Length: 77
Image (cartoon, rainbow, N blue to C red; front, side, top):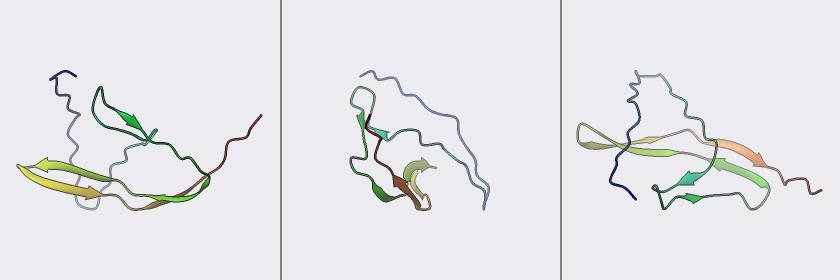
């Protein structure tokens, strides 16, 4: 693992505005020690995302609305 720190571009949200971040996979961790999460059973699920960041040297916690979705079993051939 390197000491290199990578930052994204800042996003400024006006009150009442939104910013979408597509979730294409469930991965978490740091470079070199990343982990993946998978659904192991079909069914109905809900998901909410929480982001903790720093603004003006103070922690800020952002939480999304809850999204409901269904995971279907893969077709076996």
